Image (cartoon, rainbow, N blue to C red; front, top):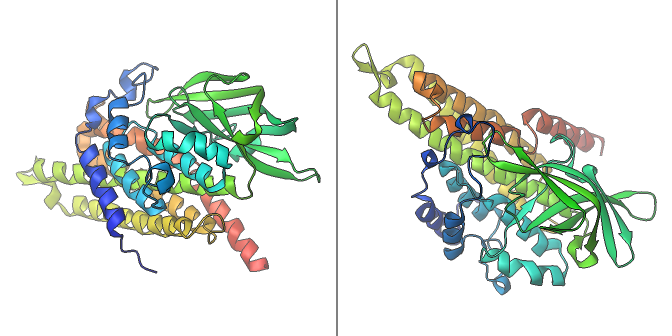
Amino acid sequence: MDFTFSEEQQAAAEAARGVLAGVAPDGVPSPALTQGRPVADDLDRALWGRLADADLLSLLLDEEYGGAGLDAVALCLLLREAGKSLARVPLLESSAAAATVQAYGSPELRSALLARAGRGEVVLTVAANGRTGHDAAELAVTARQDGDGWVLDGVQTAVPWAYEADFVLVPARAGDGTGQDVSVLAVVARGQEGAVLAEQISTTGERLGELRLESARIAARDVITADGAVEWLRALLTTGTCALALGLGERVLSMTSDYASKREQFGYPIATFQAVAVQAADRYIDLRAMEVTLWQAAWRISSGAPGALPAAGDVAVAKIWASEGVRRIVQTAQHLHGGFGADVDYPLHRYHAWAKHLELSLGPAAAHEEALGDLLAAHALS
């Protein structure tokens, strides 16, 4: 097992740093100041365009779709940089949706979507939170075949970038004709008849959407029925969330280090106090554990899909560390910043809000601990 990044992966990370270098997290108001309204009416279209121009929206796509043919490790390197600047773009969702369509979608669907998504001409997102954010997303929507198409009914909550996206990838459950349920993915276009959005506001202050499907008819070419597609998409989204959390945590620890080296008490920088140094060291250990478990999970996913090595256990471990680690990092940062940590005009407040969102996205640590326990129990019985 070799975790050395390839030249192509390192080049993608360097390009991401160049594009994201000018993004200022304090350029967006804190959710606490917007009085229940979104922090902005749209995603950062200028940044989205720069990412497209740098070919960073097509990293996972094959050359025939204008992509670089890279893997989940490259995507996570990109997301790590995005997390440092709290980039307001659906980089994870659009990339994961496109990669899933490429791996499992029909030739017609791939031809219709992938090249345009890689150029940033269309925005993709994923309804991954189900009814409540705790249940599997595919349990929230039912799909049934009807003639030459499919009919969807159900509700997906907290869909990221739902108002900005051109297409939403919706997990659903359907019967296989033998009395068993199977999972499918439906590509639902903006303005689809039978699909209604209701506004929701996330912890970060971003606008989400409750997607209500009422007899929404979807063409057969736009429904992915391949076995394992939903599970692979969920693994990629969860691992990408861990990468965002890692980047955020690294930026917050750097902010805390800078502040502690300048803030003086009793004539000395507080960074020289043993209690402060010990807390910072503990958070550094959290970051390194978040990092190694992230690359393990990303490597598992990158081992090949369809037919990849089992990634569920590694993804669960990575999300446990990401959820617990990013929470501890921002809490320590707020504590060591003192009054500045509670100031909603100071950038740390936005990082804390995003950290809480990432901690709970696609399941908190406890949910993944339970999933990991089930996997270990099943392995012991096999």
